[in-house]
Length: 275
Image 1: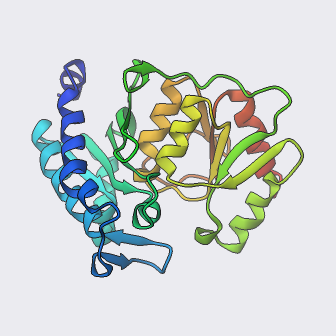
Image 2: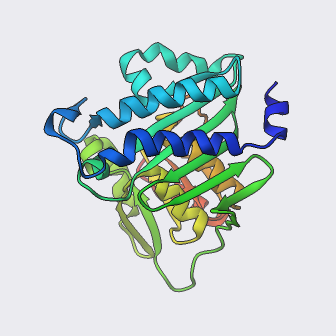
Image 3: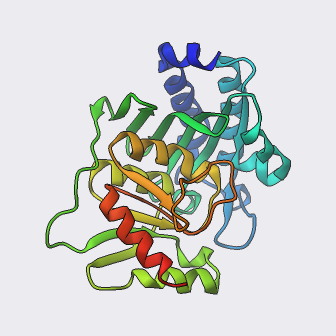
């Protein structure tokens, strides 16, 4: 069922994503009322009516495209954490973040994205990273490469003589221990900065404008689409335990994605040195 779906034209998925953004997200960009923004777990963890309505629309439309599939969405998991168990089930899973970078969206910053990834039995098969305010769409298919607006993406190699550009977990979302580990990146030859939208940071790696990222959380909706995008653009990823990142969870953290294996090993080595 999944193989047959992937062998076909996936433009219907793109259409579904663009429609959800056009009807539920874009009209609310820079137009949100105070009553349309809610704090989930504090002032830095926000959800809006756009997140919720877009996820509802995506859930209905994506499962209609692939009968028998299910959706693991950020807002659905927030309402019922048991939804996460679907990632390890037999049904194909759409992993959805309707508005990745909600804080940016709320503040009128165009750096947000809608992320969708199709997975089966923990394997990432296809992904879509759509930045509606920037009018950019990146698509990846396992074994089929990565494209940005139809143009092939390649991560390339770091620029010689330039400090590695690394996006890291924002300190607003990290514990003291996570801060201690991430602080190992403040060293010669590395230029860390707080991340924006996770999905767009992965896109920056795939484009070759960012060398690596280091994240201390494993929410699958933040990472699934981007991990496949980076892999298909020639990049690499892994955890401090030297293992692949598992979308089903239980990963050793932090983990990293990078534009090549050498950069990945260097960043993971620094993170592991925190002991």
